[in-house]
Length: 299
Length: 299
Image 1 (cartoon, chains in turn orange, blue):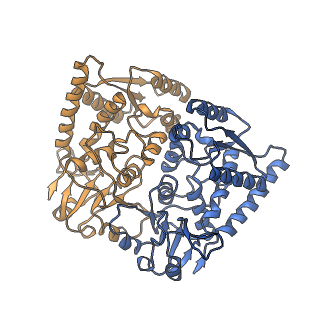
Image 2: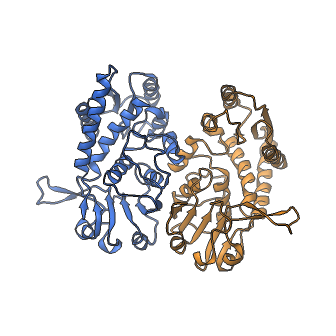
Image 3: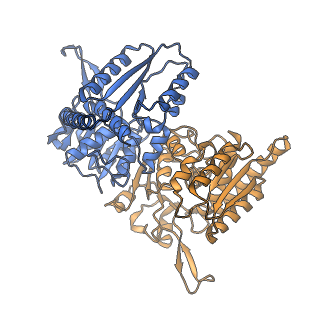
């Protein structure tokens, strides 16, 4: 059994990005720049934004926090989005969610120019991914693609079971895996998944166990701790665990532990490859945002 | 075994559309209007366009053929598309494919306002379908959804195997089937598929037979005559055959027969429901275009 070390792969990608950005700057061009829109003062959002700013600085990508009070109207925020679409000094930007209740998130997201949509959440980008056109892929599916391809885990002709049908993980992941490869992910990425036979399972699936027992690769993004157990997988399977849930634990230093959707202790011994939680998929997501920003800059 | 009679269901839907349009006109509003853009004089395209014009007239939808010579430049065609986007007298329009080689089809399709994209082929519409937002669904997946729901064939919790990953059938069909229902298709439609466990198979699938043997519903859109044979399906399955290929036949009146992707003679006896070819999915596609035009009018 081999652990898929997301922490290591993410640091490897950061090194590559640092070199790529340095080469760009050395050639006399400006560095890529990411905009991060945040509305209000949600403490979790503030932390996420701070981490993203730090990650950009670490590889030499410029980043600007664009903060608004939570009294901003939807119309005014739409105007700010239009400004960012037109701003040639910003290659890509994200709108940190959640937004205040009086602002329709979908309305804001849909207004982002897909070429600057480095979170890959606009319908235009999602549709382009589905149609096999060049697109920006959202962070988690992109990160998982990198993990699979950097560990040389082939997907062609394999049966991949995706558990969960969220807009940010399950659906785009399934679409990437079933495509002809190289279509959606840009050349600058090492990630080349595709040509898999894909089954998408979810809360209405009635025979999850028997389907999982036919899988070569299982990607679990259901948000249900311990959903995947040893009796549901066959020997030699590859398991990607996207779940990350806080579980109270009086013995843990912080009073909680992070657990995935996989019953790691029982499943891991049967696996060829498996991601740990934490340290598997998690570290890949911020690095995907950096890759997407460079992609938006280069396109 | 029950035949899914697309010819009958299509005529039923035309009757409903005729009544809905008549009620709109009787209330003093104008009738819906479809634009059909055609470039050049491809004989097959001319026939398709003539059939669409006739189908519109039959239910009271206004339709306008907007014809250009094949010398039109891409830039000029883009300007015509922009005009149609802005024209309030046109509720929806289609661009008949193929376009001449000097015009990039994707560039033209992507320029269509998704609210008028009654072929459902723009990335924006596809992405909206994937994300469960209100969208216009392309003709064949919409027609299949109508067939399934009007024959009261439940999809929730069922295992549906889709064979083929084309942008116009396989991928959007898979997306509709895995969604929570009612999200993408409008209330005015009777079609309510969704909540299915979906497997997407294609030319790189290695174990098609064993996957098909676990299916409750099989939708074949591979363009390979006779691909699905009796040994690949279990008793009680529902089979939707999207394939339609001309096979030479000296004994047939026209010198050819139309055959589907299913070996009908051997598969049909095992089925609960099956579509014939012709007369199954085929007749549903033009009627879907009419439904989409009314949807674009009403939204």
